[in-house]
Every structure is written in structure tokens, then in C-alpha cells.
Length: 448
Ligand SMILES: Cc1cc2nc3c(=O)[nH]c(=O)nc-3n(C[C@H](O)[C@H](O)[C@H](O)COP(=O)(O)OP(=O)(O)OC[C@H]3O[C@@H](n4cnc5c(N)ncnc54)[C@H](O)[C@@H]3O)c2cc1C
Image (cartoon, rainbow, N blue to C red; front, top):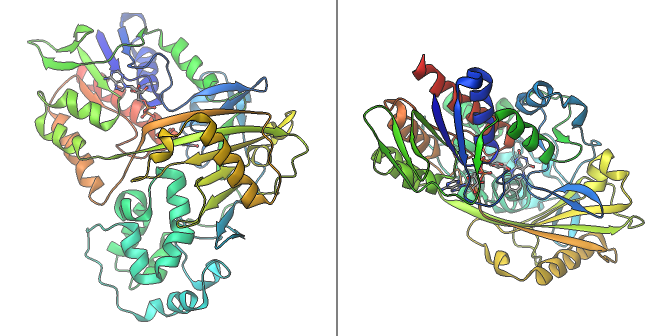
């Protein structure tokens, strides 16, 4: 069987690996990757002699996919967990503890955000259960519209935006409730009479399990193991440019004729490749916007007295250029042992990608100055690395679930064609890995 995978990010690599595991030597597997390296938004580089992730640096701890992959690949000793410190929110020129027991920053009552928002907002949250809620069952609105209407703009800008900025590089106004907060949408659909109650119903039970997991020597360990196990013919610096059907399968340019194709490239690329063979799916994929961001990794003198927190998220509207800092040396015990203090600063949100066009020197200077502002410390980087992620994160805007359903329905009756990637069922690395596995299973099912 000849299969081509388009895109060498985690989604495509997992798909390739799963196919090889299932089909062994009978599989002729080609992976085409437009850039000159494998990994997509996973990238580990050496800083001050040790590996540091410049894209994703963690995964959600309660999802099983990444620990399972590490175990299958004999890499379980690479699995690490954070120290369990909490982040701060920088708002109104001061640092506040990140509210506890919220759903992506949405509180179920005023106590969670006391100190972060003003008294009038606290009173509004307290009174929210008394206001009738006008929720259309099965409907979708932006998180910003819902929370702004019920709890006020301060909750949006100071509590919700910083959380959504971290996951989607988006803002509450660019992210839809149904795709980003499915348990909240379910609680509202089930008839919760107000937002406070819906959030309380949607919150997972309290848990002492680690919120995140990570990979000790960086994601490159996983990438290399997947690549090696997949035994694919890898063509980097090669963009897939066209997809058509043949009498028995598919023709993917420039690879040639194959029996099956997995498209694991970002939504706009998938849209272009699907245009001829699945126009409705292509139109739906073309409706998915992307946001861009930049990461600046700073290596600071080990003595730098960073706050004892995992990170600092910046509220919308603050006069800073960075949107968040990960205090990596505080967050991860394995990084605390390094000879330098590591911090990652993030820039760029949906609708504002201007920091991506700044020269490296300006980004590094902005990262150091803003870190100095939020910590009150003198920041003197020993070295720094800049990584730009253009179009790195799909925006799950209102209606996203319907767009994804249209994409999947559009390819459902095309045997030997599957899609995978961050724009489908979650942007996190575990969700992307799951989409790669699902795509491989679809190809295997058709074959059977
Ligand atoms: C700054 C940042 C930090 C993040 N942090 C986290 C985190 O800590 N934890 C977490 O779980 N998630 C995180 N994410 C999200 C997560 O990293 C991504 O959603 C995920 O890695 C995407 O994987 P993918 O394979 O679907 O897409 P990608 O990694 O984008 O891979 C797609 C690949 O397709 C290639 N391609 C494009 N066009 C073509 C073509 N025509 N032909 C061939 N190849 C093509 C691209 O070059 C790319 O390599 C982060 C994202 C960003 C941007």
C-alpha cells in the first residue's frame, strides 16, 4: 500500500507512525514537509548548552495520548511534571494570583476573582444568577460576548483573555463557546438558568493530578522517535501542491500516485488541496482563521530572583508588549537544575501580529523590559532565542464545530483520504496526536 502524508508536524508524524505500526513492511510511506525541518510547531533548540522548547512546551496532563506514545516508544523516563506552582496575572500594573476554580478564567462566583476585578464587577457577578439567561440551545457565541454580557468586561480582559491568549493566541472575542468550552456549552444546553450555575456544572471535580506534563529533553525526543519508527521516505522543503483522484486512488503533486493520502497541514493548506476533490470541505476549511505569535526564550543569570510562580499572564489592555511569560525554571523542576534561569516570553494575538515583524533585537529588548516591569527585577539576558510562529494557531471562532463537521462530512465518502491537524478537535499536542491516530485508522478501515 502506498500512502502519502502531507505535513510533518505532530499530527502527520503520529499518523505516519500509526500506519507503519499497523502495516509493517508492506507500506510504502512518503511524508512531505514544506519547511526544511520536521516538527511543525514543536521545536527544541539548545540554549546555553541544554534543550529548550520554542513552540509547545507542555501538554494537558489529564489526556493520555502523549504519555501513551512515550511508553510505546520506550521513552517513559522522559515524562516530567511541573512543580505545581501557580501563575500570576498582571493587571492594573500589579501582579495577582491566577483565580482558582475557573473555567478558562470564567468564575462561578465573585470569590474566585476578588482582588482582580473592581467592586462593581464583583457585585455584578454576585447578582448574575438573578438575571434570566437567554441561551439558544445548540447555539454558539464568542466567549467574550457571553462573559462580557453576564459578568462584565473586566472579567473578560483580566481573567478570560489571558487564559485564551495562552491556548489559542486568541482573545475571548475570537473564540467560540462550543468548541473551546464544550462542557460549558453542554451545561447551557442542558438548561442551566445562569452562567454562574453553568460554570459550576461544567467545572471538572477538584483533582490533585498534575495539570500539565512535559518531556525532559524537549519535544524533539518524541519527534525523532516517531520519525525513526515511522520509517517514511521524508521529503523536506517539499510542498504538496495538488490533489486529484485517479481510477484507483490519488495523485498528490509532487509525490505521484498513491493509494491513500493524509492531509496533516494547517487549514488553509488543506483547503487548497481539497478544492477540487471535496469543494464543500475545502470551503469550510478556508473559513478557519489563524493567529500568529512569537516566542522569545531568555537565558538569565541563575541568581535572577524570579517570583516563585510558574508564569505571568498579561491582562488585555496593559501597556506591555508581551502577552505572557513562562518562568520555565520555576515551572519545571528539571529546568530548575540548569546553570541559567530560563524564561519564555510570548507575543502576538489574533488580530495583532505586528510583533512578528519586529527585528529579533527589538523582540528580545521588549521581552527583557516587560519582564523587568512585571517582576521588578533587573533583567540581563545572557543569551536569547527568537522563534516566530506565523499562522501557528487556528482560531476556534463561533460556528467552529459546524465547520469541522462540514470538513469531515466532505471527505467521508472519499475512500483513502483523511484529514488531521490542530484545526479539527483541539489545538493541544494531545488532540493533534489523537487526530493523527484517527486519520490513520480511517485509512486502515477503508483498506480492510
Ligand atoms: C507558540 C505556541 C505554543 C504552544 N504551546 C503548546 C503547549 O504548550 N502545549 C500544547 O499542547 N500545545 C501547544 N501549542 C499548540 C500545538 O503546538 C500545535 O497545535 C500543534 O503542534 C500543531 O501540530 P500539527 O501537526 O497539527 O500542525 P503543525 O505543527 O503546524 O504542522 C503542520 C506542518 O505542515 C507543513 N505544511 C504546510 N503546508 C504544507 C504543504 N503544502 N506541503 C507539505 N507540508 C506542509 C508545515 O510546514 C508544518 O510543519 C502551541 C502553539 C504555539 C504556536
